[in-house]
Image 1: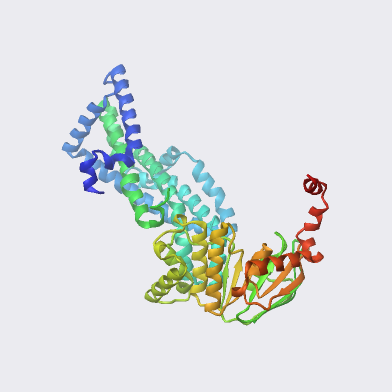
Image 2: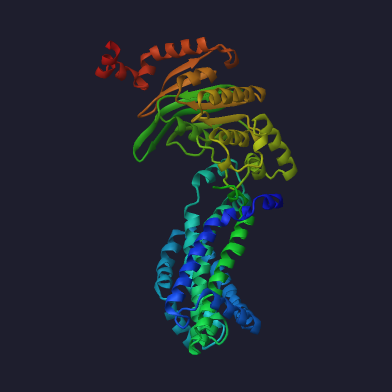
Length: 262
Length: 254
């Protein structure tokens, strides 16, 4: 960021994210109008929600819940990503394996996460295992399908070019397969992370006593609408942080060739 | 020396090549020409060992063969420098040497300002030069070029042609160049093979006593018109059909 430009033209460095800011502003205005129309019991205003978030932050509830939910997400998503990509690569290479595993993946995709939660409750009781298990099975198909796509769309002309240079396997892996896989996996990661959040909150709400979902449930029982909205806002902001401050910068770092892309 | 002897190739029961033979001596430039779809690329792919003919002998005694495809086929996630050095990396050459060599080549190809650019930032002509650089980097003694000037305007084309001729003669490379443009073939080739389509055969051979560097425009157009006067050459480009077409006559009389 160029600091001299900042002084000459205020808001200059906000220009690239101007559309996002406009979208956000419109959303906040609609929310405010809705709150004014229906009253704070039904729909707390953005300000009231902000105050509730501040309260949760000072009592330490916010930190604890975020930590627990992040742990569930990280553990489950890591398993789903590694397992999904591993199975997806094999399925992409071996057609019979893809055919064999496809019905299972379709089933995983088709079963509603809530059904998994019911099963997990019966299997694991309460605690961390239920959200972790549910998030894993819910996001695994996305990662699997992304990896299969990546392998199957691998540009054969590039492979042919590499074969003429008698490229050894390790260079094929680092210079051809891995960069291509990465560029395909990223959209799946973003989609998977969004789904993971939704499932995490739901699983915690039904099964655990800690985490954002559990706190949301508590706020519901207490009929504390401000706090319900606060937790929802926290989830939304967390998803934004995950996408804009973690995944996108990660992509920027790992895929320098996309930086200059329009 | 590259020898293809009575190559027969069919695809899905359709004969593609019907007994194509050619030889290419070290340092020589051979142009394969003919209409679109006449099997020029297939001949080159067979010469490179990318496909196996159904019968016939392929004997490539060149120490190193490099192929420049019709499309640049650059790795989108690598810079100009990395793309040029790709073949060297495949050979396990050290990064320092790779860098030095690819920078040197980029200089010769007029790409020194684009060393750190990715393929999508380059024009089509520049991408093609990067692909040429990648082929030259492995120090081949035979270069196979499939329509290397495709999609370039006349100015860029001449520029690239002159650059390629100089590189070929400086390095004493043998080259087989595919072109559907007869004038381009006459400009470049020590020898020209004219191919006819379905199934492909070589219908005419042309050889010039003059070296490509000394040929002028007058010579080139004279040779092209003499070649086109030959019935076997004009018919494979479907030129005799056009001359007898009723609309053609109409436009002549207007």
